[in-house]
Image (cartoon, rainbow, N blue to C red; front, side):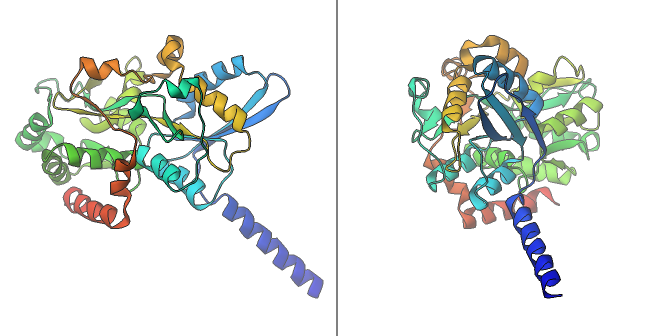
Length: 345
């Protein structure tokens, strides 16, 4: 009897430990086998598997001995995996620049340097630990059918006036991020609040019009395409561009007052085991600017400082300690209370 009880207890402990090891939630996991025996690169990423598959296959064509396990998760779950649970991954890729910066700031990231990282602009890398490899603006995505007889807003002030003047046309048909769930949505919202006072007026109007809240850009784009939404605010432009050839009903608008430009970043966590392959992947990602076929297939625009010289409306969200301001617990709680009171009316 004692042995049976002991066995039961040990099984319960083992189950608890196993559950704790995988307590963060993943969306998808896919393994890309190597062409010949070698090593494995474990990647956790917020980028959809379909978006990243061409990059992985091209990387493996140059590194046939590296198998890749690619795990997708939300930015919040990625942070939970690395920050709270110490999950073993060799590379972390995320659109939430502030959370990536926090991982580095709190000592959970390895240093890495190479000729490729040295060529990055200062605003696109931090501490030889966090490296940007894309620059993706936050845009408006509109339903062409919904705007057939309406003017297309080109600034946030124009959008505010349009929504105020046509409440019956837009009630329940506006989409935006739920910033409580989406790390990228929170990043865009806090940057908006820094850039313009009209952000809070826009949020209040969207709240009064029963805005639908989303975790992801792809879901918003899909609902605009189907006609469920008339417009979606702060959608990743790269994802929208990738859908243009399939969704004839969507129109992408880059606001002329300013565009927040998110830098998708990669870092090597302290839990990494295959540091060599992780470094090779970082260098490969930083070479996207010389690989137009991958840019075309993925829709991910590489880091290109000249874009900001050509268009003053583009504003890169710079890597650095300034991103940590809104991650302060009290500052975050205050911001979220204001956001909830505005959006949930």
